[in-house]
Length: 163
Image 1 (cartoon, rainbow, N blue to C red):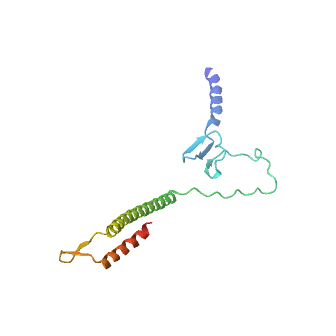
Image 2: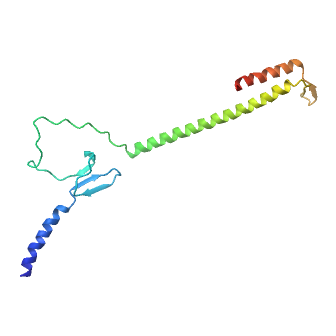
């Protein structure tokens, strides 16, 4: 007799529990599959909604005889291979930019060294002192006025690029 009372309660509990199962399934912004008895959040693209409850024709909203305008096609998110290719492209560009910046810094340092040497040479040649140099045999020789003028002109050409 108790079984006859308990059976309808058990059936009613099972019937009430049935709608609680997940009726919607979609992929969220993080790529995780979500199951819920509530619809996905607004703004979820239809291509990411995997499962939705069926609506009957009676429950469907009134649709006019004119066909609805199609939704504009949304570009698909880039695949893993496309994202990897973009990453490699950015990394190669960054490496090229770093190499170019290092080469430019090296060139500027070389130019600064050449300018400093040219300034010292110009000051030495304009000092009015008697200049000597070493010849092929390692002997000291006096620098002529023509050689001094040639070296001064060469130092000034270098200094013209420094300014």
